[in-house]
Amino acid sequence: MIQVDISSFTYPGKSGTALQNVRLGIDPGECVLITGPTGCGKSTLLKCINGIIPHTSEGTLTGDVVLNGVNTKNASLPVLAKMVGLVQQNPDDQIFSLTVEDEVGFGPENLCLPIGEIEQRIDTALGQVGMRPYRKQSVNALSGGQKQRVVIASILAMQPDVLLLDEPASQLDPKGARDILSVIASIHSETRRTIVLVEHRIHEVAHLVNRVIVMDKGCIVLDADRDQVFKNHIDLFYRLGLRLPETIELFYQLELEGLPLTAEEALFALREEQIPGHPENGPLLGISDPKKPSQKITCPDSAVRMENIWFAYEDRNWILKGIDLGIRRGEIVALLGNNGSGKSTLLLHLCGILKPGQGDVSVFGRSIRGMRPESLVGEVSVVFQDPSLMLCCDTVWKEIAFGPHNMNMQRPDLEESVQNALKVMTLEDERSRPPQSLSGGQRLRAAVASVLSMRPRMLLLDEPTSGQDRRNIIRFMEHLKFLSTENITTVFITHDMETALSFADRIIILDDGKIIADGDPREIFLDFDILNRTALQAPQSITLSTRLGLSPCLCVNDLARQLKPVTAHA
Image 1 (cartoon, rainbow, N blue to C red):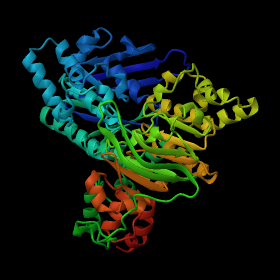
Image 2 (image 1 turned 180 degrees about the vertical axis):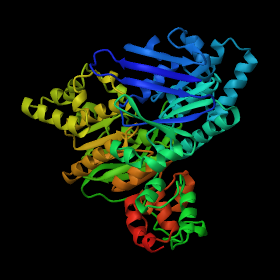
Image 3 (image 1 turned 90 degrees about the horizontal axis):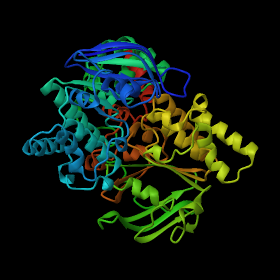
Image 4 (image 1 turned 90 degrees about the vertical axis):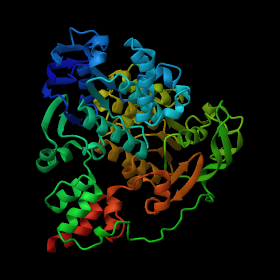
């Protein structure tokens, strides 16, 4: 049993409260979703539940959290670690061992378990997250998504009664996310452990949970049964700028009964409503033989040119294998692919941080061979997957001004650039806060703002929508669209298929270090061979529209517009 009775929690140096009047109880065996806008206090609440607050995190807590009759204020962290496990937003915040095996075994070893049981727990946990082949590998050689799997395994190996998961699939590819969420579902059904999930991508976890808690500005504004939430409180999600499952949105816009959480459930319900189309036919319809995207294009006005790029890290295994790529000025390009496919490695070649073992990379007509990365400052700016690696100043304003100041930007221009970046990334109210005191999503926005303020000719963004609510994603991506009209190029890595489909001019898919698809987003998501090969999943709007025999829809609003005349006469 989890009992939370918190009057307030305030971080040091911040006048407002991060949590206020938070009161809830969670029964053993429940699976609960906590969602809300970025920075509303979700992660802070999880840290209160597992005892990080008040034991190691500074701030003023008024109130109590009780786990199975134990007040977290009065229990030591080693005692609490046996009861509750927390998977934090950023895996690098939790990993400190040198190898995967050592990381997963650290907790059981500190429980003083027999060697045989420790070995068994390591093997079982790694198997659950699909990381057995990497048991002896250095954690530094893993991708961000692979690190996230290791952190989840390290918590599973402890076998706590309560699992707290802060965006557990945020850095995973679609297949990895489905696998991990399937593991969570199995753990819940088989062991009846209590599970609390924090997630913005509600469509990915809605089917797992029986209860939904919505937070805003440090308060709980809704706490109800999942079906009641989606049936009676859709307006709240729109008001807070939160993402809903597209199927739920579609039925809401069409004023149809039912709460379908998957495309299959929606298709069945539409058939029951006698909607014309082909929901019973199984395979996708609409385009029987989609055009195969090209793998190589010619760019007469290119921002980037990569020719036969091969690259390996110290282990000498090729990460990039014969990459040929051109990117035009002003293009918005989304890089998709499974974890470990080479996306981040490719991105780091575009800013000169990495140099190819073979081949050549040209950026705005200049070869990066022999070039120091700082030579591209002002022309190319990169945001890493972990924004904390980029934040070094003591306030958000100074962080965003750091780049322009070091470029010797004149004071009036500097202040205008900083103010514009604060506005675009909705950080005006956080300008005086230390960046490291921000939530994970806010830290990412601060890192993005710090490169926008430099006014580069090309932006390189590694998972820029991670941890963001719908409103912030749309605002930021629409700004990138505006920048493209000024010939500014954007290349971004994402596992968010809806964002890639809605905002990218072009999608490139990597698999095992090779480009296997390159083309128009709509064509890519209708190439079923590619989707099956990479286990990527088309957004529900594409799946539903094609299964209904309609022209492919890029978003749920387009699909609703096509179906409204039909449902009105059904």
